[in-house]
Length: 173
Image 1: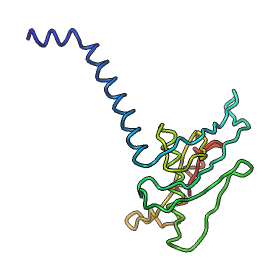
Image 2 (image 1 turned 180 degrees about the vertical axis):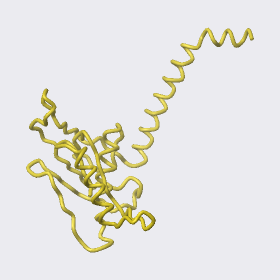
Image 3 (image 1 turned 30 degrees about the horizontal axis):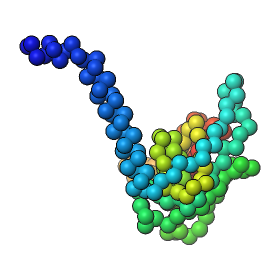
Image 4 (image 1 turned 120 degrees about the vertical axis):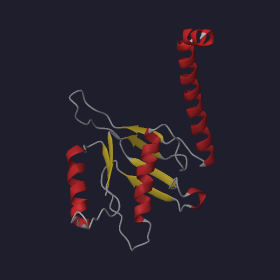
């Protein structure tokens, strides 16, 4: 009981120590991960909001140089991709097994990594904006049990994305 009382008196210091240890652990984990993936810090491109909440004019372009899907490691085929600033839609076409989905997922994952304070597996000179929303409908959500076809499943997802997404969003379909 005496020991518990002594520990209880130091609860504030103990909590601060735990919080600081967690923060340092996160910083060290980010550094180790960045080193493991040969990561770089993308040049930030900030989408600007006006005081009334509308989007302002800014360079919110995406520029990825030799970017690699983070889950595929060093064996990933690097992609070079630019979206904007004069245009905001990129359509990728090609035969099956051509890497379209991997390219799309790479952009999404790298955007999320960037916004989480992680470095990304790409070359210096890559840049990413800060998106105010990142939305994706990737894959096949067909459900025979619920009578949902592939097409209707995608349409439901697109409708939900359109309700939420704005001009400063990244939408991957």
